[in-house]
Image (cartoon, rainbow, N blue to C red; front, side, top):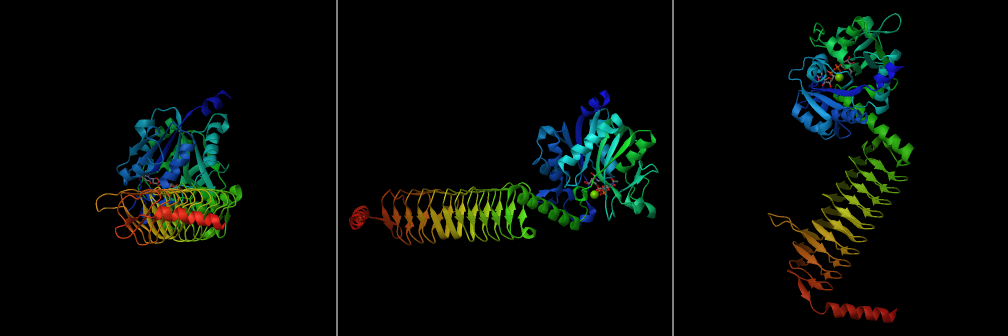
Length: 481
Ligand code: UD1
Ligand code: MG
């Protein structure tokens, strides 16, 4: 019992193998940098590893190592990660051996993950580690995560002895016909007693079909030395699928997407009209009774509130959408915010921290860049609003353009509350339009417009009697009411 407790308290480190090129991808890009769900394969693996709260995550890098490092550091914080260079890629055993200086004398548990096996779940890894520590009450020297596949082609096979216990792993290229018929495969995910792993690794040779130093030789070496090796046979085969070519990459993309969308339907009550043709990031969140039409892409860390409708052909990336929002067909929304009860589209484009405040509306062919469109304000047709701040209940007429760029620098446009910008107005920034003012159709506004003022013309000039006229109109409206 004491042994179990001390094993469970053993420090956990993680080593991710990510130095290979991945010849079968036929790519100039290192395999682990290929993406599913918009993120490199190795980032998916590192994210799961982080959830286990290990002491440190070590990543073995080689091919395009600097790029892999940069990608991984988007997922991991620098103080809990370390990078180990494997200059020449001589096999998975050689990759682990590159980290010898960090681990050789550590009394710890080492979880080894493959950078190309991205679907593994936290719960599965936690169960693997638990079995490793609890094995026969004293802990195992090595525990291998295995699965049975209908088609095991390409994977290392798990050969068991007559008693059904672990004997060895044989790689596809080294296997006899009889061994190739074995359906139980090595997932490439293992737990090791760190000290015992590095001791056995010294005896690994490269006398095999690929002339590589195989990590998969270590478990049988441990077994020969009388050390306990345990097998953790998992049932979900998709979790341990590796990516070795682009067909497998596309398959995993599809599996991950289905997993995400099913979770959203079952746990959150989201309606997908055609789940197979809808693309939703694992990191997105979507609220209850929101309806997502076919061919919608929801990417990155996007959140969408309850009761929204997102129509076909729309792409939303790293954005926040409030409740009861209608996004009509073919909109592109990036790094932006759409508040409750807004409507956008069809064919609207929001980018660069654009923000629509509550109940605002943008219509067809309207682009907002780094612009705040105030509560209840509207820009319904053919408009560009860049670097602008627009107040409440203001109407931006068709064809309005903020001329925010003077050829060298960007300038701001500020428009107040209850303003009516006439159709085809050019607002030459920097410029301000005060509350309750109006611009005539086709105006080119080059100077600030005070509140309660009508301007018109090219360049726009103040029309003197606007305020009296407005007051008269209001008075006669009150009389007739
Ligand atoms: C490996 C296993 C195989 C297992 C399969 C599961 C070995 C010898 N074989 O085969 O038993 O069924 O994974 O997916 O381990 N890597 C390095 N440096 C190297 C070589 C590889 O860092 O020198 C990295 C790769 O970048 C990759 C991982 O190790 O992330 C696995 O390498 P890969 O070549 O894909 O091994 P498999 O042939 O898939
Ligand atoms: Mg592989």
